[in-house]
Picture 1 (cartoon, one colour):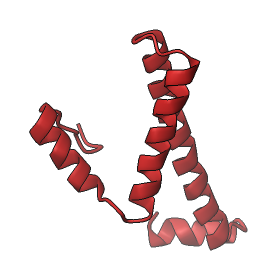
Picture 2: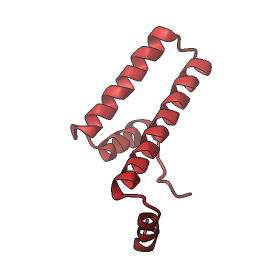
Picture 3: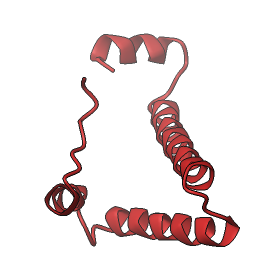
Picture 4: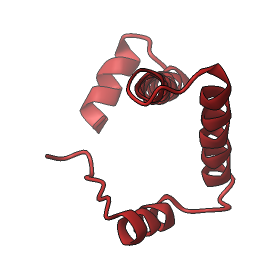
Length: 94
């Protein structure tokens, strides 16, 4: 959001705190959507049942926690997947 947009939002009574909360809400929504999609693919396409699905989703959550706590960097994980599996991740741009 540029300065002009922030000023217009402030005139409408939207505070910086409101904007930050909207930003965080968007991030949480995106993470939830991606997590549900991963779980559905594991269940529907790969046949994961409740036990295996819960175990894998817990491991994914542990990985998110490790990234959040700076124990590991996303770039390092991407590099490992590229080297060991040949998987490349695009940035948000097409």
